[in-house]
Amino acid sequence: MVGTAATQKTQAAAEREAMRGCTIKGGRDCKVSLAYRDRCVALAWGADFYIAASAIDADEASAVALRGCGRSTTDYSECVRPEWQR
Image 1 (cartoon, rainbow, N blue to C red):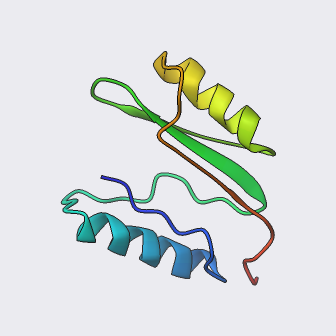
Image 2: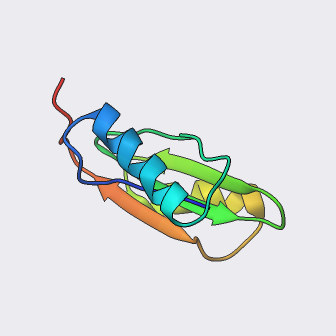
Image 3: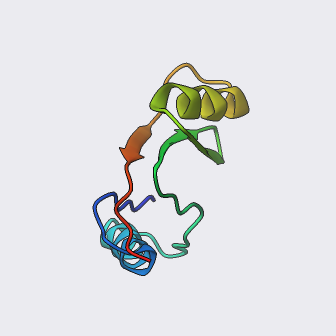
């Protein structure tokens, strides 16, 4: 399961929203594995694992995730520009 949050104003709010999304989808062992700001992220699943990668742009994040799992397409990608309030 995966939960994501790309439009929250704080890291804490984003983490809560991602956890909520994971739980709603049936996740039981939900955890935050990557928090990012002003970056892009890509997730790619292998047979029994996933790779989460972040980079300055979506193409680079996808390339890193795909190298790690040996696939040709990512399962999720998103870019977040500066939103979090400190």
